[in-house]
Length: 372
Image 1 (spheres, helix red, strand yellow):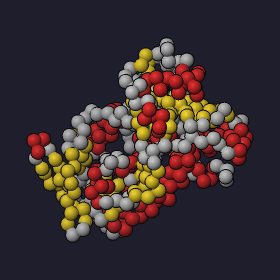
Image 2 (tube, helix red, strand yellow; image 1 turned 30 degrees about the vertical axis):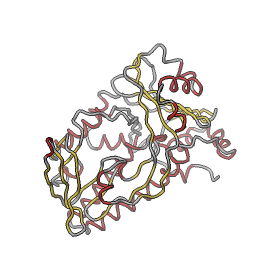
Image 3 (cartoon, one colour; image 1 turned 90 degrees about the vertical axis):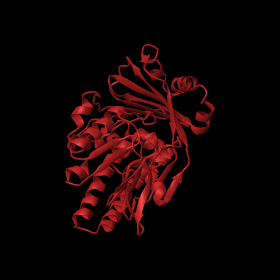
């Protein structure tokens, strides 16, 4: 969408048929991501079915912090649209901007010329193959990226699966803010989603999640009752509208670009979902990459130099959040220094907002959290 609006010929491929959903995505969009949606002109379509909310209530090992994350360019709302809504709106906007969109199109392999990626081979129905050549191939295809695997993108700062989530969606829960509960090695959270539903989730350490695979509902209910009894009390009067989902992920940082290729979103850096930064990160990195690609394809800079600059800028911005997220994902008991900090800012709205900003990608955790 962003490159098509700059006048470039763009072919957008998705292996799924639209409308499609991503059951593994818990899809909370922070104000940073909402500001991008607003600037791209697609926020009204999202807001029509996913009500905005601003408030957060975070229970950190018994210390309760309440407030709102910092606004971004005047946007202080968060949203929880389901992926079948969000992805469809973005795909339609890309087409309206001049991109060609093909769903049900799987990238089988990359085309290379003299060590540079020069296009893709698309696998079609009945075993057909079609070659599409391109000056640049961008992998926005998630943690199992075909592009990343094909070019051998190097990984660093790898983290194993630590914690996992079980969640579903309910109608009839009166909740207009984010609720987050963190205890040692356990947690729960909830926020408004699309079409009047509320997502409610339980955090289990990975070994617990594996043990619960045969009865997710029982494990979910037990954990929410244990750490968030007030949230658990809302469920009997509500209607669960679909099955329980379960998900977990390892974390890693991949090199972001090379000759004729680039990675963005979870294809380039995958964080644990505990901070729900994935979608907002993907939007911001898409903007950064579009600017770099435009510099390179327009001739303002050599393309490879522009892409290397994108890699450096992405890491400068995101690595503090990556490290912070990896620490939170352990659900460890806070140090006395950290526990004292939580208690100190409990009645300080400005400092509470700064801490929330470390989660929502507006304040570097290195500048907010006390030294260990």
